[in-house]
Image: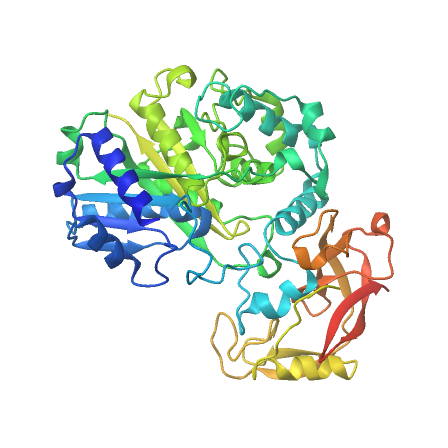
Length: 372
Length: 132
């Protein structure tokens, strides 16, 4: 993964028009090669000394978490050019006899002795992600009712968007609401086509000071607001399963940006499952609690529509390359503001809302991105 | 049940598992804040009070949410589908992860009253729930 870190860093810097020798900060996610001392391992490999080094561990919110940490560090004067990189391509595979980190057998669930999940959740089969998200969706249905066609439409509109992004894993493979509802039920009420597609890949962004950004090659994208909130790991222990952390995170982000949901030209919402998009629309303030299905039915979520959402296809259709899946939403919002979204370009896109989501809606980050 | 992972108690949680072995549900209670606590901790969540004490409760509660996992959630449950995974809210307030037993999948609903079922598995006793 170190090789990929270096490749992604160079690609992002070239794209931005910034010399690698200007980098003075890094945000990194985990490495296969090193369980600890990750930032120094990266800095040494890159041959780039830094004044700001963050190891961010927020699951699917890692990427958005990196972006605001980098922006805050720059704002404080701790750094001026920060590389935020999420490599997620374990290639080449290690030799059979190499020392391997014991990967968890249970997805995002911690299975080490003494972990509450290992003792009170995993033994009952509540492991990985599908069951957790399914139980949130069931509770949502109990509270507000459930429109499976609206949930399916989220996946369908995003698949349309993937048709406009040549890098999307499901590019050129449109689907219908009937296709989604006819796909196998994995964990009630989640169908296969409402569940994210794992992929291989990686992503990187460069967060820089205003001075550096203004001389870069692209239209600057300002981190105008951010918010982060987390209170639990396993949703069983959430105070209220239907009030997701993106609520307080978004309120903080919009307040900081002196903006409101109505000011947003496009959204890129972390979409590990369709229910995540629905509940984020509600809790971030784009519609009222319980109104998500109606909102989805009344709006066209494609890049051509009145509420462009996940114009890269979302992870459901673009693919989820590990933690880079979260970064794909940052790139989606930034590309729109930079006017580089190609066929999927939203006209006059100056404000984007981007969300990150880790665990089972347990750790969430909101960003408000803006162009001049 | 191929290699289903079993709970491994810690010194903090041991009384809970000992209780289940005897067919009793023990929960922690913090007198200073009046809150019931699950899972077992050494200090009360929120206040970090050190006054947690074990109290026996009925173990009855309601289904807060559930799913029917039609594909195994991990290879260890490959022979156990559909898995009836649920979150039960005990009458005292705390919620816990569990599995429902002695119930048809289509009969499960949120708000359903349930009672504890104690199932010995090797060295531990699992706490599952059935319709009350």
